[in-house]
Amino acid sequence: MTAVVQENNSAPWWQVILVGRNPRWTFLRIVILIIGVMLMRQFVVLPIRVDGISMLPTYKSNAVNFVNRLAYVYGKPQRGDVVAIRMAGEHIMLMKRVVGLPGETVEFRRGELFIDGEATDEPYVKLRSRWNMPPVKVGPDEFYVVGDNRSMAWADHKQGRASKSKIVGRAIL
Image (cartoon, rainbow, N blue to C red; front, side):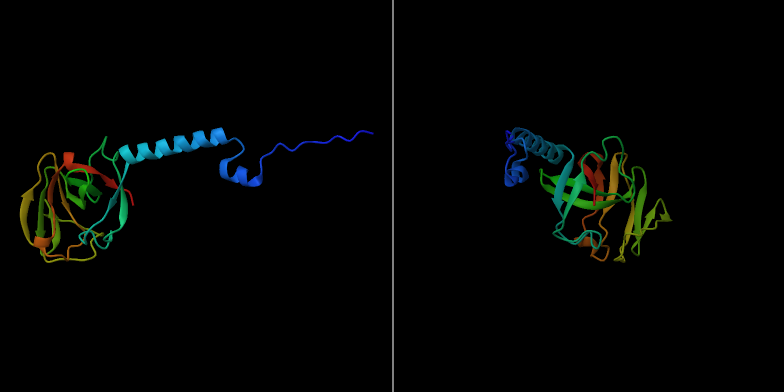
């Protein structure tokens, strides 16, 4: 009688967990994953840090959020969208909410938003103000943007018209 001895050519369990059964394929998958993440970061998703209280309570100061750069490739921002607006250079941006669309007239009376003379409901605004602003006509390729924290003083709040070319994308979260 002859005993048949089978050799076990499988890798140790720790190697299977760390690099898989075929290290070459694992390395290739890692390289493809890294390239994919870099391309997403470069062309699709932009991480930004919210600095300041103008978007409270929707977005807290020092929180990290992501902007979809492809959101407006085939469309335009809509009323209520939170957008990132490039101010100066590559890394300085504002995060604001679109309240006025091209061709509309935007006005604030005692903290209430009026579009073309009609009051507009803003369920996202939790901190109301007493702002008064005369009517402003939004240009054909512009959007009127303002933060959600309306309890800030008018002079401390950055708001106004932003051209479509300055809008980088829409906030994802």
